[in-house]
Amino acid sequence: MMPMHRRALLALAATLPAGAARAAWPERPVTLMVGYGAGGATDVIARALAERAGSLLGQPMVVLNVPGAGGTLASDRTAKAAPDGQTILLIANAHVVAPGLYASLPYDTVGDFAPVAFIGQSANVLVVPASAAENDLAGLAARAKASSQPLRTGSAALAGFQPAHELLREALGIELEAVPYRSGPQGQTDLIAGRLDLMVSNVLEVSEHVKAGRLKALAVTSAIRSPLLPEVPTFVELGIPALQADSWFGLLAPRATPPDILDRLHDALATAMAEPAMQARLTALGILPQPMSRQEWGAFLAAQTEKWSAIPRRASVQIQ
Image (cartoon, rainbow, N blue to C red; front, side, top):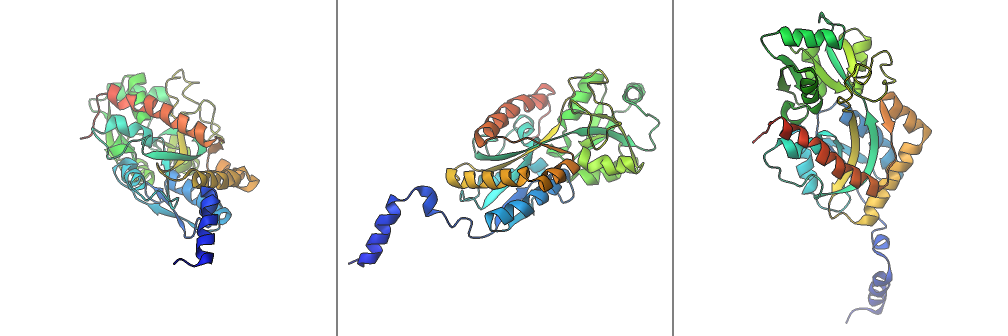
């Protein structure tokens, strides 16, 4: 026969809400998956958030880089991870381009994930080598149209496919050849060396190269100028409003993660991002924090998937 105190404890547990039964979570470090290599914008943001959010949760948040296939390897691993709150994923907007680019994915971009928290948005910037003759967008477009060969671009996202490059091709009527990289900094190294003609990269990754004179910035994709490169005009100012293609960042968990754990993750991240020190840190990284509820973030993710997955389909670009 079960001891009386054991039966009493089980009876008490049955009366408690699900969240109380998991009050000890997290009991071990939380893994924050990043689908890109160290040093890129997504990785830098992940490490800034993990340090503070981990302290608020009472357990370390450990960043795990799983680069490859444009971030889809990390997305797949997260989708298939145990839904216990111990594994979460920081995505950039390449996540929502993937279903339009790949012939098939081993996960559902929206349906296999639960929204945790939206971080914010950050400008992308069109950069060329310092050795390039062009100092503005018009000059770059003229060279591209006069060249018998497509200009070479680089991207760490989605096997070299970069939506902003496609929008640039459409807007200017030029041809581009995409070169894939495992991380943004790898592509920027080749751009500085003159092995690429241009890149559209996150402002965090290239602003120091621009300030040091290693790259030239021609335009930013945000609606307003970036505080990291305030002298660089927007594409809107240059008469190309279609080229608003900022980066954004958000956190997801496996679909069946319990709501109370998702809420605790969201609250820890929201608390961290509301702190003046973290706001200053994100601003220094070129991030405009944008608080959202979990429900708002989920709706935003679905809408962005519909919008940006259409671009590779429109261009008839597909990876088998």
